[in-house]
Length: 205
Image (cartoon, rainbow, N blue to C red):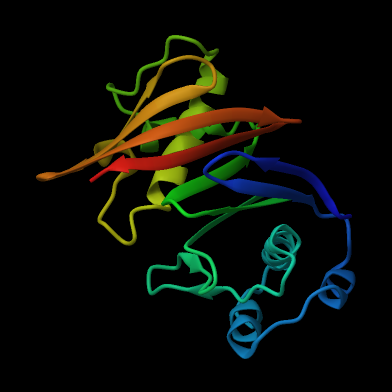
């Protein structure tokens, strides 16, 4: 399937691809450089490989050109022709964002499994005044993932170093704190179908 959603804001644009094609069909629609081929060849999980190809297709569609994706030593994707990209996948959806600013994005399919892992990422300073518990857990997890993608390898524990404060059902404040390093974030939340999306923008360092 093609892109099922494009959202453009003043400081970013993102697209969502719903993956229904076979891996062979996806490959027919995109060209890879050698680094990208090497990266994909290392992915044994077929679904994960399809998600990665779909992310490249999103970026190609958003830019109208052939985008070459590389990865930092910390595993973060980047593109030489664009100042910042961020990529996420969950189940049948891939999402990719382009921005001039340092922004991270994360997407997560709603699942009761979030309750099992909450002790690994939730802390007493993560405040919730607006959501049912399960929605709060998904929004908080996605927000912390989105923040993590902007940290460029800084040491980070979701539970000990990232804190989320809900302002309303679509906006939160985020804080990364490690020793004397403090970074603040604005976070935007949304729900698309049965998926949670969080977008984190770094506002100071």
